[in-house]
Length: 98
Image (cartoon, rainbow, N blue to C red; front, side, top):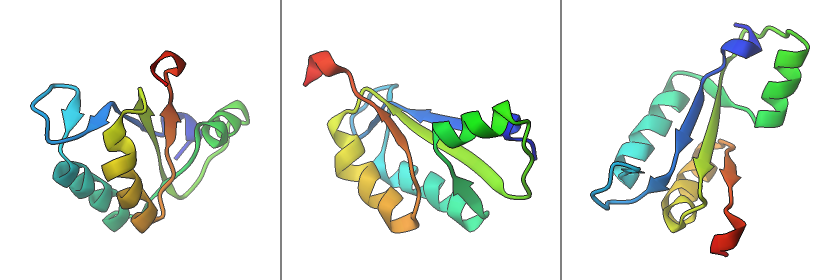
């Protein structure tokens, strides 16, 4: 697999709120467990950039996980799941909301 073919999964909020921008904690955990069970390795955007710029290939199944907006559910629900599975993620914080 070439680094340029690495999927990027982008989430906004992890919550039971009925909102098209949200995914439930249960569904998020199922998705992350699927990745773990299927031997995906998370990498950072910096690692992805380096791999793409150097036209690197890997035998590993790579994925990047990102969260837009740094909403509360990312810390409350997603972080413990990611930590348990040994996954990394990138969070984009909107500084005006802090």
